[in-house]
Image 1: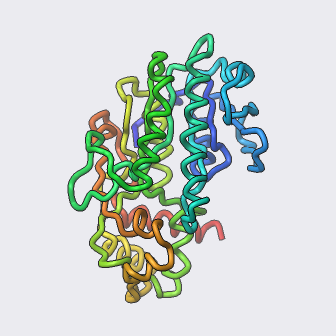
Image 2 (image 1 turned 120 degrees about the vertical axis):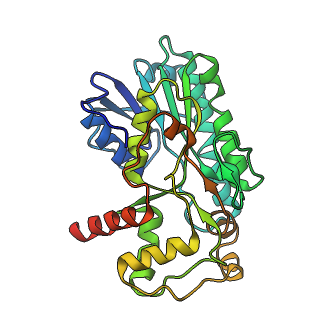
Length: 320
């Protein structure tokens, strides 16, 4: 992680959407440690629980532009937009529409509203994903790599374009392209842990597809790094510097858990059960590198998968 010897955000007013989510909770805890005054952006008619770590809450309607939304967004130095429909679950036509609609339209409304404030924030950090690149095989994918042609690729392209109004208003926009975030209490790691603990985990497909992963603590630290590094703008890959094949991923987790990993899941079975989710998330190969983060001096706490898994497993054991 970035080496910071004292709180870096003292006095900064930071607005965060998705504050009650897995990443939101981790990020806000870190922002508070760095001395920031944190406000959560909650959407009208949302049933999500509020994050009690935050200093205040502002309720907005991001379904359509309004003067009320503009007024609610006044007074912030930084805005971090993390909200979006989970990509986990079977991708029915309705689910895919929710994935897209929860990202593109709210981001466009937010971007327009920020551009219309009397004193716009200096920085707007908006989530994106390495799904932007689609199937990449073994090709190294830095931030300059072109977009892919899969469903998630187009969602990410449009999601990032939705920030254009903020960018045109002189706001520094950073599109953080997250890899597979590994966290002890949720997300992909929590979902995959039970079968591995039972000794029935195994490689997916042929196991050769490259996986671009990142520990959630490094994600939160990377966002802080983006906030305090004014030269960072545009796409920023937030992935660990050492992608692994699915076979390596599987065997490493099995070794950390001291469990066998001998039951493979053939590609055709995954596609039959999970459809496009299997094609785009489980079987797609992406060799993504965090070029911009490393060029600006960011140091990962968990650059290697084994150390990340050891930390995650220990955290779960220590917390029941």
